[in-house]
Image (cartoon, rainbow, N blue to C red):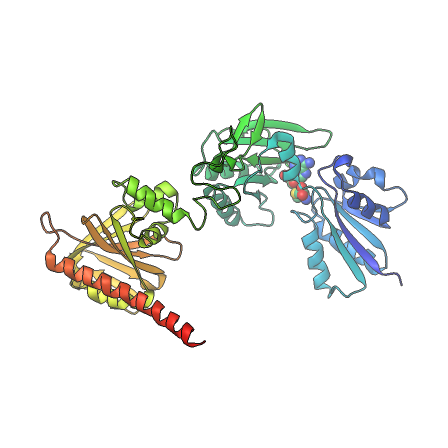
Length: 458
Ligand SMILES: C[S@@+](CC[C@H](N)C(=O)[O-])C[C@H]1O[C@@H](n2cnc3c(N)ncnc32)[C@H](O)[C@@H]1O
């Protein structure tokens, strides 16, 4: 019997001239064409002499099962979808049906996925160049995805400053999702952020609305629309939505010359290997900045600022800041040492609240993986299992303490020495410095031992 074949065909946004040659050939090759009735209409001209199976909107799995059944009979089947069939389309469900039926790549049915221009490409092209930098797509359909998952993705995309394409933004029944999406995005993005709403791109009833994030949910939006939301640099000019690629970070846009300190073909000075040096320069040039100011300035976690400070060298200081990293295996030694620091101030922050607890360092105890700071007025329990790094930190002789940092670089708590009058107690300061030097040396010694071991292998 003839081998069956399933062609999973994305035919682009809808206009024939935007369909790829391979999509056209795949449909021509098929004995049977299966698809949602609207999609079948869009490729009607290519269907002469073919068996056509139209399915309704909610019959997605039926389309995949039908394709499999037809291919088992040795037929060539084209399962068609608008845009790219792998983007919120039938490619995934079809593979799932095939795998459930025991299909393997060596089976009697061959499968080919034919890519197409997805709605976000098509809609972007119609409104300018909004996707020229990092972007993501999020479907607002909660028919198969729980809302908390969608909300979490919206929040992450907004926080990450991605340009966002919203698929399935609204339907007759699903009207609240776009309003909720707007609320979440506005927590992180300016109300005047440019937004383009494209309905039926490259189809007969194409319509485009240019608006802002603040107005977005009041616009006419339906299930034939894709919504494109700019990032913090996206602008609108001549009615076109453009997201800069970032050339202005490196080149003078008038002369084309690389800016001071930048080189063509090389990472930016603010690239992976250079940006800690930029943090140190900022700290030298802004002596009044504290750790949190610097973290806010670079939109980076506090742990990264501490890492930049610890890399300071003579001639490349971090202003008046000094830091030393303590390996987590030395946390116990660190907490034991801290018991000699007289009175300490334990500080815990959330975005909206700060707790500052004054207590005697001797009240600092360990129980299992908990670090307990307890006196008759307050209890603070820190899960040491969450501490990814601990740092001795001093700033301009005015602040000395230890910062406990989590795996994301976020601050768990800081333990700061407390002045007596205008000065730190000399004995306490000596004890702090001694611990800082000893624990720092422990790390250095460890690295040296490793290096020696490596050499002795030769
Ligand atoms: C189930 S998804 C299918 C996506 C499709 N596979 C693609 O790659 O474009 C349906 C959603 O895609 C978007 N969409 C598809 N075609 C579009 C077009 N021509 N214009 C605007 N949006 C479109 C809309 O957001 C719609 O709700």
